Image (cartoon, rainbow, N blue to C red; front, side, top):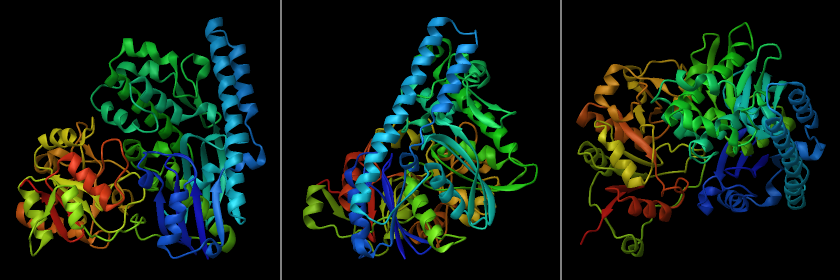
Length: 565
């Protein structure tokens, strides 16, 4: 039985399940080269069918999200209750109160249009094309990715993002393949909008640059701006839920929030970022600690859990036995969640499987003479390209990798990556300049699995998060000595573990590099042109290689460099 999942929100995506196995997944942005693109992913649908030699008639079911549009489920009560709360409290002056009520009304109107018009029309288009279409709740789709692929028999699953299907967060109890919703947080209390509004305040793009806020946070003391930032969101110990404190005159369920502007005059950007990160951690930790008195497994999905430092803090909670974050935790993962829910409904699977996140297309590694002329490159003559790459890395050369199937999700996992030595911290500035990036985080390390415990403090027993770079780890002193380029100012790093079962090519490179340098760590960052998604095709890779002026590129088993003649 084949099921094709479709996501039409940010990082629009498609996946293919064969029975209970995830065998293919791709995001539309990789084809149209527009980062975080949203809309119906027709190119991805066609490519998925083509690469798997299938026709539409071969697909048993198509699955997507947007259930609120079918139920006409608009959360009027959530907004009505907030307005009553505002009207009855006297802390804010009349003008501010009017402004807040106006913004609540605008948000409610926007949500009604999205649910009753935009989402409804999208589902109508899909239904007209695919008769066997199943539609599921947004956050339940997130939960399905987190639970079904965690390997846990039972766990609690928490989803948090901006909003989807009239909720911004949900908690589920998951047992024996069943996902039971326990409680929800409405959009008006969104933690995703809290963090996104600070991203916007500090001059970055929400839904895209939240990682910059996380990186910047480490450069200041969170206490300085915490008293003001803490007024925005909180955890209510009575209702046991998140709350956006709109009545305190700061919070709005929107990226655009002029009420935050005075904070920029009062504090440094790094102080605001530090307090924002700390508040997010505090509120989510309070929530999770309150879930159960007994120890439990925790699985996570939703855009907020792209925050790798938050994930580390959650993993450090004593009663959390183990933690899993679905690698494509944002809306890009909704396609997988919808398909998995549909598959479970039909066959009652208790577990779903995928070998790794190398789920995208694999191109033939043929670089023709015309391509070499176009990109002004030449082939490096070598009998052993792996050994040659390791040698070049030991000489501090920067090498791009284009190998095997493309990664699914926001992290480059060494099939579409740039790698280099981590021995000198100056490589961060060199790489950022070449890639035209402004980053506050160091580049991530890729490390051989057998050396992980030597360089990082172990809190991830199953290596699930570190395989996919979804959590930071505390670094040991030796890491700062051997690989300072990957250690952040707060002494953490976001490593990717590899072994021959996960990525044979990268494992061989690291093994050879270790023999030369006695270091099992390299820098790993995504191969892409500035502000574009990770590369998909060989042509994309060569374009990124040329524009970034990297030293070498390994395409399959062929090594190339610039032709300076």
